[in-house]
Structure formats: C-alpha cells, structure tokens
Image (cartoon, rainbow, N blue to C red; front, side, top):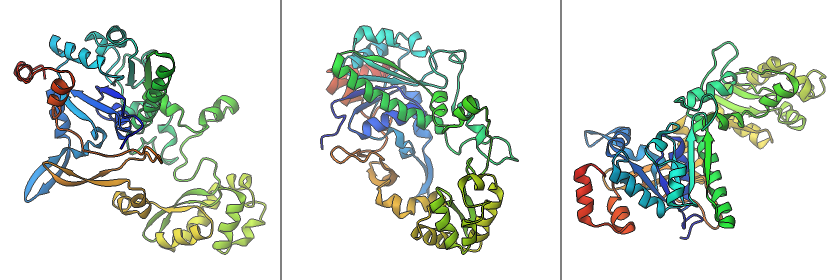
Length: 401
C-alpha cells in the first residue's frame, strides 16, 4: 500500500518519549524512519520493556516501546570520527533529521543544523527540548514534570484542598511530539514549493501553554487566576466526574441549557428547569457545589452501565470512567482498532497500541514492532549506503556500530 509519506526518509536520534512519538506518527504514515542509537543506549531501551512471565521464565518484552514501531533500528557511536562520517552519509540520503538532546549536544559533535546544512542544504532539522533553543531556561535540562509546573498546567490539576498534581502521564511529551510531526510535514510541503529546508524548534513548555484552553486569556484579559477545581469543570456548568455503585462516570449535564433540561427530565427534577437559580448556565456556575450534589445524589444509587445508558439514550453526554483493562475492552476502542496484534520473532503474538491516523486513502499502519538494537544495520549501511559486509564487521569490532 502506498502511504502518504512513503517517499520521506527520517534520520531519528530521538530518545525516551517526545521525539520517538513524533517519528512514530511519521512512520505510521509510511515514512522510512531510521532509528539511530548507540549500542549502550539500545540495550538500555530494550531493558525497559514490559516484565512478564512466560512458560515459567521471566522476560522483558521490548514491545513496550511502541513508539519505536515501524522503524529501522541501527547502532552508531557518534562520539567516534567514523560514526560522525557515517551519520553524515545518511544525512545525504535523508529528508529530515530529528533529535531531542539537550541544547548544544549535537553542535559539540559537529552535527548541529548549521553543520548538516553544509552536507545537505535542504535538510529539515527538528529538535524537541524542554524549554526551547533560546531563552533563560534553554540550557537547563528539563522533563515533562517541570514543563507542567512552569506552564501552570499543574496548578489547575487536582482538588482545591490538595497540592498541585501532575498529569498521570508525560502529557507535554505527546503534545510536543504531535506538534513536531505537524511542523515536519509543513516544512516538507514548504520545501516542495521552494526547495528550502529549515530548523524546527519545539519546546515541551510551549506545547502545554497552548493546551491551557482559555486560562491564559482569562488572566491577560480579565485578571482572573483559576486554580484546581477537582472533577468539576472550571465553568461550573454541571460537568464533572461523579460516583456510582461500582465506580465513576463522566457527565456533561450542562453542556447547554437544552442538555440541562434533558438531564433534569431524566432524573425527575423538572422543577430545576424553571428555578432561576438553576435554569441557566450562568446561574448554575454560581451554584457549582449544589449542582454537583444534585447530580451525585442521582448517580450514586446506580451502576456505571445504568447511568451511561440512561443518560446517553436521553441525549445527555455521559461515559464510564474506565481503568486500563476496561479501556482496552471498551467496544469503541475495539471498533477503532486502537489495539492491534502482531507477531514478534522472539516473544510471539503481542497486542500493542494501534494508530489514530485514520485517512480514507492513506491510513496509518502498524507494520512491525520496535526493532532490537542494530537489527537493520545491514539493511542501512550495506543495502542503502553501499558499504561492504567486511566494513560492517570491522566497524562492529571497533565499536563504531
């Protein structure tokens, strides 16, 4: 199947989450992504696989690194002169170079954007860092949790009487990865029109700032500083997470006044639709706790399934709060094929996260699982670059690959 990016080659130095996720999206769309890592880093990556017992033996399954699926895996030591030369050879055959090292790391190796422009003037060079390539924090090492803290994201997460709370996963890495993939595709389009490459500078911090809804504008325009509201929406408009007999449900009972009227009819409280204290979104916003108590009083006597079915069929948005096992089994998740099974040569049949990229003509695909370190050394160094097997053996003995 011809895919949207099947004519694009990406040289990927990405590590951990943000850039590997970015290049995973490109690989899902057909790009030839060559994952470059040192032998040491590759072994570390594989060691972080999912632990399980199979046939009485404990093993770690590297399929945990789903972000490296669909990629060709090579080993290359960039701290050796020959390693730098081979990397530059690969740059000549590539459209995009991606990395998420600390600011200045690749420049010190002679592999920064200005260095690689000499080798390939139209190269697209994408970087993801915690704080960006400039500014007072640029030189500092940083991770998602710091971006959540500085951005204010952490200050609005959690309950009012509890400390600021980090998101349950490294959310800025995924935001930044998506923005970087979009930037790369945009840069490729620009290069097709003009012949010019460019540098892409993505920051975890920036990615969270644009994901704060309108909280920034609430302050810059109105001087309002919102803080943690728990499981009730900031707007206080009857939306939140409420208990049931067997867990919790998410309900948007006040998405509009029309939805609120439907909800009130369903729970037998039609009087609330004409009560001036509850009939409008503005009034309900001023009575957030009272509204939450009304909704909770109805949900707490019922199961998740009953609440969701009753409200959904009545035109009120509602959903169960799933744990991970329930999420995997959810019929909507299954219908969207968001978990797929593939065969691994060592670990057998494995189920892994699917692709969200649903295009009618060129959909994303999960073709193979994460490569083992150096799995595609021959395919890249011999078949692509034209070097010999003897050279490959020599470089391996010398620690170059």
